[in-house]
Length: 278
Image (cartoon, rainbow, N blue to C red):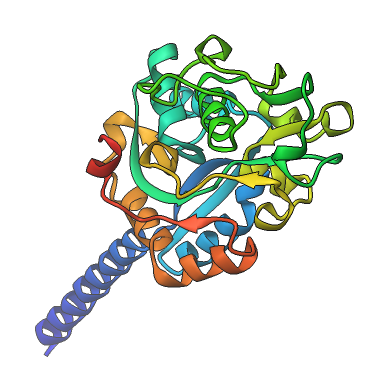
């Protein structure tokens, strides 16, 4: 009888130990994964939605806001954040080449059409000869702005212009306009001092504009170089947690949320990376 009791005690002890190990394993597997995502202020309403959805998958997203277009990529390369989501693939490609950064896109998000804004004129055709136009000075932003100016009939560009370049690319300037390149984030602030300012969509929204209503000219259907992306370090593109975040972003409820929050000014765009050159 004593032997039977001892054996039973041993079995119970082993069972409790194994159960404890199993619980520890379950706890480990359910451990919350933390991910820092860098973005600018205009992207916060979207990422608050993603943050809520990710929490249901045991992913805790911390949003890290930046006020410029340089630090989010540098912070990603330095390991201060895990992902960023603020830029077009055209800007991204140019930036990582210029700064020799080992980063890569892991998903596409949306298109944010650039616009021409003015406090003085209601149509670009009313801008008088010799006027000053402000535009973002970053290389790809400037190239995009030049294409918009051409689309608006204010300048002419070479037929082979690829969206990258500076003011030297202007071949035709019938109104003898002068151009003032400034940091993208400052383009709304100079509106009182210029005939018009070309403003990135996100910057315009932050400044209180509704692009489809307030811009006096806006991009046509935007080409693939202007699709926005989620970026990661190149050696982490297959990270399952990051891929889950991309999948959550590209669900229909997020697309509807984007259109509602931004008054149809942003276009959800979920395409394979191959379509943007990756």
